Length: 191
Image 1: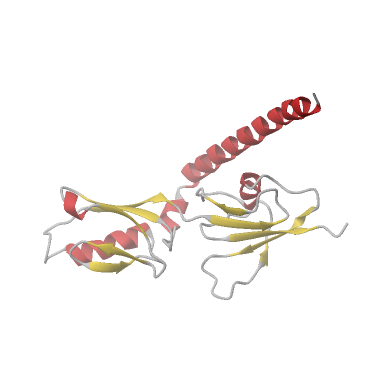
Image 2: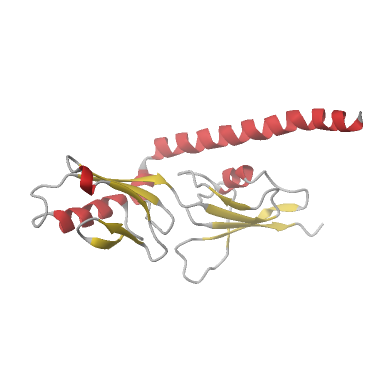
């Protein structure tokens, strides 16, 4: 009887967690649509699944994950370094590589099918890696990871930027933007 009651009591809690996660993901998508600048400033990196569409050239269109050395293997050209480029810069690089020798006037579109994950450690209920949602904040990332634990300090949230070669932890506010590949660390409170 106790087990049944325990399961029954946990069911609404799990439903609430799932609903909260869905609201967070929808809000992140809405925030990205409102701001619009995230797509223009997003820098590609290792782990991003990119889609390259070349208009009327099916053999040159592909979907591929950027490798650990920051490249994709592209037909006719070979390895192309996309890591660190914006989507517009990636399109320009492909245009330059294909124009002349292969195509007269290539029309290219590069998009991200799936973003590389962000990571969260420390005093959250489910630390790990999670799919990045453009425009998300540190608080939204914490909610995706199940929320704060009982011992978490809401004032001691640190961030290591993916593009920081020194891996320096920077204290952040909960409304600060998180990027794909970033690592969030929530410290425990002393008391």
